[in-house]
Length: 348
Image (cartoon, rainbow, N blue to C red; front, side, top):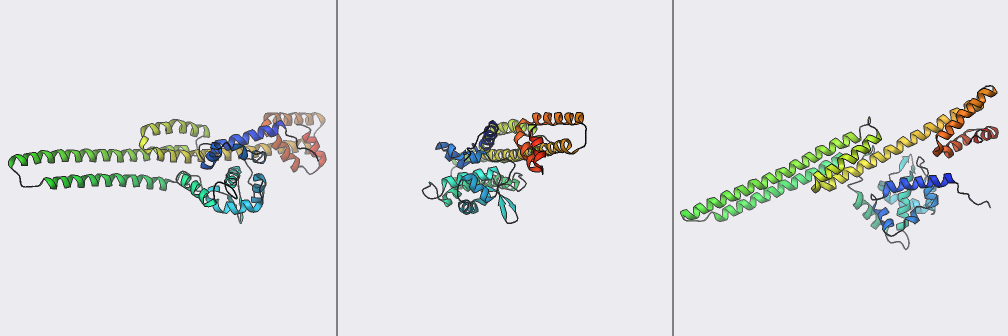
């Protein structure tokens, strides 16, 4: 039996996948945090996991193979976590990108016979931890309705606190309403004036907090619209995130949880957008590579012209060394004769 040979290209691709997974989960996933605190990350970053392709969707059987467990084990567990896994639904088939596969890998490692968590316990842990920060529309937009509900609730709490304070003041005034001498009446008036002043101060403080919440809502909406503007580049979006959110956290420390909620959702939006761009870029490179190959192999030309085409094809392969394997694999499967495959692969 021939032993598997790990090439430098394999190692590079695995490191890239590891970086993608760390970026997606470190500091953002309660499950990843469990593995990290227990020094179990090596259980997650296995060779099959690191050999995943970012642009490929995997079936349940393929997920089971990557997780190195039986098919039924994945099928049973993924039913309990569909909202968390966010599969791509194609008819009756569910498929998963590398993020979904990694989530299933973490879930499988923490549940089952002899594991630390039951499935209900893990569901509670996941959904209690992410129900606010990962609630989103299918288009990856920040759930504005949820944000507005949270802010409205906070405003209602402030109004309720203000009303309660006024009732306390009113009660104190009524207690003072007793038969009294002229001196007592004067004292009562002074106390009443003091209580009114306290009520005004309380109302001003409450209104100030409400104004702060309204200002924050406007600022967050503005940042979200800027980040999600389809006309801006990813670099601009990331720069805006890095500039605006630290300022918002400094300006509104009491509303830190709302700011972080927006921040995490927008980070997910940018990460998904970058993945879409990368997938489109890879497909364009592969298509151009195929066109060059067909031009070299199929177009009639003399030896000088063919030599020139070969040189251009070699330059193209050298221009994208990180996709060398993908180009070769794509073209090898696209050619329908062994002779044509050998001619093209001989270029690399």
